[in-house]
Length: 304
Ligand SMILES: [Zn+2]
Ligand SMILES: [Zn+2]
Image: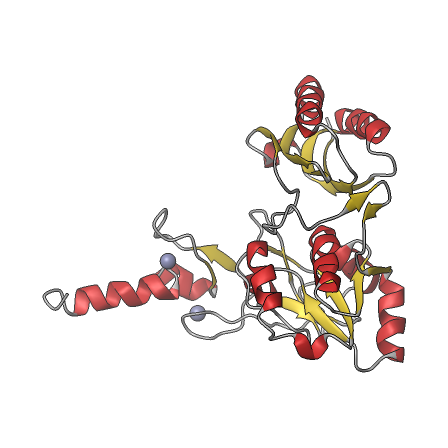
């Protein structure tokens, strides 16, 4: 049995998100698919895995309602997801501003202009003052980003609005800005919020970093690894020994170059993901904060 994973999103007005949630849940249960699906009044965002024929049926049925939705097929299967979760939420990407986003049958209203990977390179060539703006959280950018990108100080997408309103990025408002994120969905929302706040010329990349990396590997404007939300925690666009590959991350303990994130072993109190080299991880499975606290606690047990 061959298995696959489907990744997809579509911005489209949904009159009754809860009805769509129930339909999607029944559809997946009937096909034996597992994964995570979020539905809101603005569309759908999901990742499901299972038997390839089940995935094909799912895609066909889902397309009947979400016309024009694109599915990205990836290696993996139901075993990558412990269960099926189908939820109706306020937003399909959680920016904490469900009232601000405007969506019609063509998708997000007033979002950034879409550029293909090829158009990104042509645009940068013709516009040397262009700014790349990272639409992910700062941790993701530690191991990979576009050359000279501006990386906002955000831990989750919830922090973006406060960050944009802070004035820190006002110098970019009259410059061309290319926003980017992993697969493109976050920038659909982010680019519209930037335009609402006076950023005059905002672009986004079709298919995000994933599609750009597929087109150019390590020989384009991308540097480093791509953070991914599964057990691997990162992926590369070229072979590990590719001479064009740039190692951007550093071990928090010894500063050696690394692109490997780990979960701090002090779970569930600490939910930090931190960069570590293999040697340090074997000696000390804790993040820098927990390591420092542990040292302080053992060095002076009576002075607390
Ligand atoms: Zn180290
Ligand atoms: Zn920790």
